[in-house]
Length: 94
Image (tube, rainbow, N blue to C red):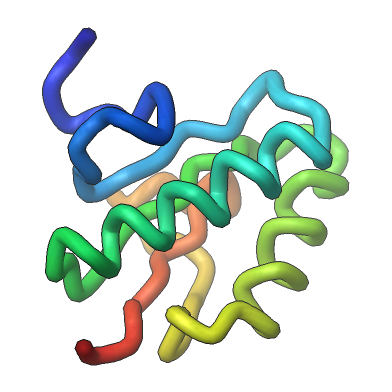
């Protein structure tokens, strides 16, 4: 298992989660688990890597982030952060 990457619910929360090549249902489940772990690990900001593609996964991820209780805010990745294939998430405080 590589350090800094999130590959399952039991892995320690790194600062990013990769959702590319997953179905929307798989990705949202993994995202929810990751956000819980990242919050419990005390992370302030994380990156959600969903890829560009057709935009379906990006839209579903951002919709979930908009209603998630552990998310304070989110924004598209900027230049050097992954652009449209990444969403940067600020987590709520403990």
